[in-house]
Length: 329
Ligand code: AQP
Image 1 (cartoon, rainbow, N blue to C red):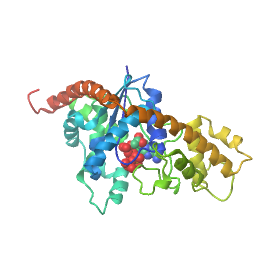
Image 2 (image 1 turned 90 degrees about the horizontal axis):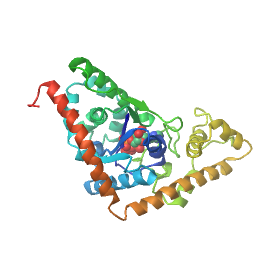
Image 3 (image 1 turned 90 degrees about the vertical axis):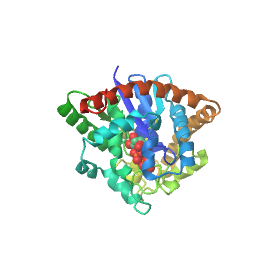
Image 4 (image 1 turned 60 degrees about the horizontal axis):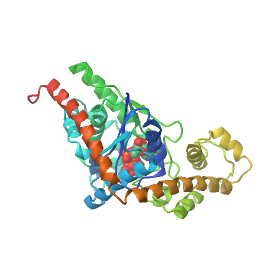
């Protein structure tokens, strides 16, 4: 069976952009592929989070994965830091990748600007290699991600190809999988930048755990334009185009159908319709989430996930170390 792998960092609060760009795809794919979804807690160390906050966020992320529809039976859900073979492989790959490659990562350029005052860590620079290890260690066939992570999956492909060429066939070459709609959901208050869970202004983000009336208010006050024509035109009408994308992803209606449906409607009417869809989604997720966190479901799912993923990862990490000539494997 082919394999799917992906993960999300437990930083900030998960947003509807993380849902549309990533989680929705995980759920659609989990029945067709052997699926591995992790909480990227090691990646979140790159920006020095508060330890108590991080501990809470890890559980919250797993709870939200399950509440969104990931199934602990079909999918192995695990915590990245509990699988010691990821950093073990990462080190081997760091020694087979180049500073020039890291310098080209646009996420590093953006995030290092964001964290310039509190210090840019070495981890932020090298974490794309850890992400490469996360993917290659499972011989993943596909990696569902939003557009901002596509470049990192391409790096993983390059590193895998180079390693295979140098040391013999070792890794499968992974393919990034982007959603047809919603690979880059934009900020509601500034539709020229992407919605991001660690953004400082909460008004630009819809969080999966937002109170329903707050989420509605955020949609109703989303920045649009003065035309009041529901038309998809990301260059000239980025705000309304972003709302169309969100609506399209949540209803599975095409953009053409949506433009037709709202051709005589003003923005207020359209926004109310989107807010209804967002409310349905959040209510469903939140009802499940608050049930899931009541008992030990999260622990059981993580225990099962780490058991299986450790077996697979250990084998690949030792295979690589053997090929590199280190240790006595
Ligand atoms: N705006 C977005 N539109 C569509 N997909 C998105 N993703 C993130 N933002 C959008 C996808 O969600 C997953 C989260 O990956 P991550 O936690 O490793 O961090 P990220 O890509 O840096 O996402 P954020 O929300 O911007 O997090 P912070 O604020 O922590 O940096 C990925 O599949 C991503 O593509």
